Length: 126
Figure 1: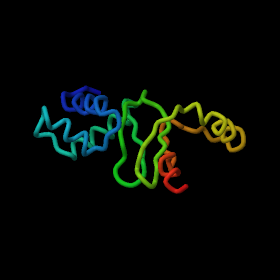
Figure 2 (figure 1 turned 120 degrees about the vertical axis):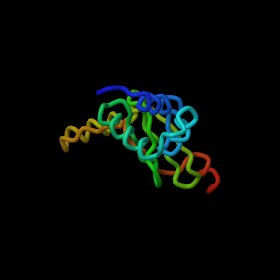
Figure 3 (figure 1 turned 120 degrees about the horizontal axis):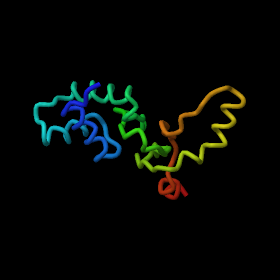
């Protein structure tokens, strides 16, 4: 698979933005390549994901967020304020072991978002 300038621009944008929707990636790419459209971005992100260079995570409603594949962590998404926190995947190791042992299921914690209520929002309710 050839790394075209457009593909490289998309990959560079994902690296720079760390977590970004396709629309955010498109805006970044268009700074240097204004003719690139959102369809090309989606197509390229799909290809880069199949090649294992990027991965996507659904952080709730709306478009998925893309990051480079080696950028692994669990996302904690507050369903009240929308804040997104990152925690190490290792925190889910006990759950991963249980799922593997009891159900034969291998957890991909680096591709995961957990929904709940953040510390700040919990304080507001107290």
